[in-house]
Image (cartoon, rainbow over all chains, first blue to last red; front, side, top):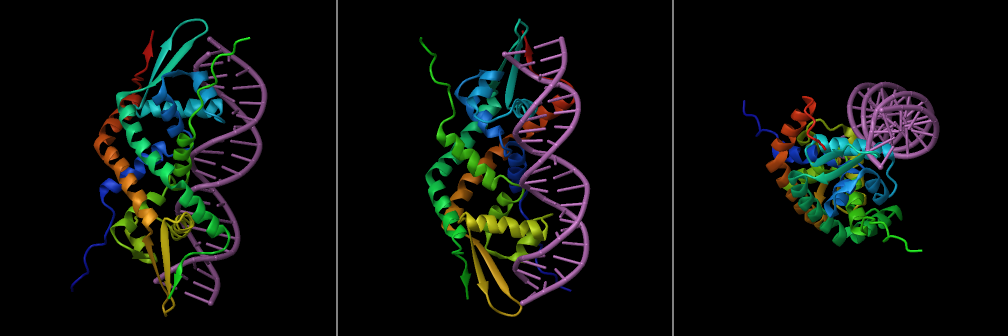
Length: 129
Length: 129
DNA sequence: CAGTATCCGACATGATACTG
DNA sequence: CAGTATCATGTCGGATACTG
């Protein structure tokens, strides 16, 4: 019995993309990375620069990025305590790729918005044969 | 009274990145895009190729991508019904940027895994001064 | 075949209060 | 200043059943 060719499963590298996105694709990670790319910052400095982030989420996001080796944390034992965050070399190399995606977003967001507007207006663009 | 310089808020383009990620950064969108990049497919064909996706999530993901103008849907009124999905030109251009990110992921995922392993082993890598 | 409808649990996020 | 702890809520996603 002849069986048709094996299913065209996705290659492992495609899975890597989605794994990466599940790491940095949350609501705040990219914003934190882009902020740290501009300059290393202290905790409350980040909180001020990233509009709308809660203290809790900033802490969690930084911990995750630190765990992934993308951000380095430096504690200075003074009073008041001082904690500085900066991108690691790994984090810096990631930000380059993220910025590339940002370039696409900046060039095409109007097309996306337009497509959504059409969709929401009820003009579904699919084809019926 | 002299006030310090305006807060270093993120530039609008950075926000665009996070907006894009909130669109395609969900669990399945990128997987669907990468699958359609290889070849246009029918509904159940996609379901077979994308391991683990539920019927519900495939439907929702396709609707969102269609709404964003990234995917085109073609209905053939036959019995049984036939529906084909393919990337639009916009979707194709996005996939290039996504693949760039995938390249980074493929090159560096070992470093990330290693960093996580260190963290989980309790060796927090931060610096104390 | 290609969906829709419904229910439900898990997780992500926000708000708030407290601490070394 | 830089967190941690706790609670409340909303959304995401899976399972299941039904339909043109």
